[in-house]
Length: 172
Image (cartoon, rainbow, N blue to C red; front, side):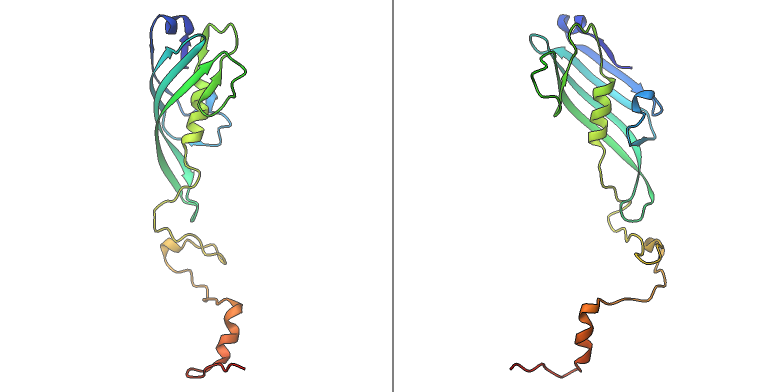
């Protein structure tokens, strides 16, 4: 766990270094499947009266599904963030700002880290740029080759089949 005594932050900046296992209870219900430990390095410091700043870098790998063919994809996640912590509950939480409960002696940074990891993971993942996806009729993976379904045409173009080559429509 990443815990920082706030008294140390008032005395000077505190280095935050660690690794959190992918099966750590802090990541339960994250809706992201971590496959490697989350490596964290940062510096936590006082930023004024009851305000703190955490410059943090984290990296891990998550497992996701390709949005086109549903294949498993390992996605590296590496981010650096600047987060503000304050005891002022009037400030809106979110967008890198977190409220510290009054009379907190030791601040646990695991929950803010959890949120930042979730925000850093891409929502739409592709196994490769030229992924062909799945056949909409039979569900076959088109990256492995054609599926054998007969080609279809849009029924809106059927009227054009009545025109013979060389025929031109007349205008009235």
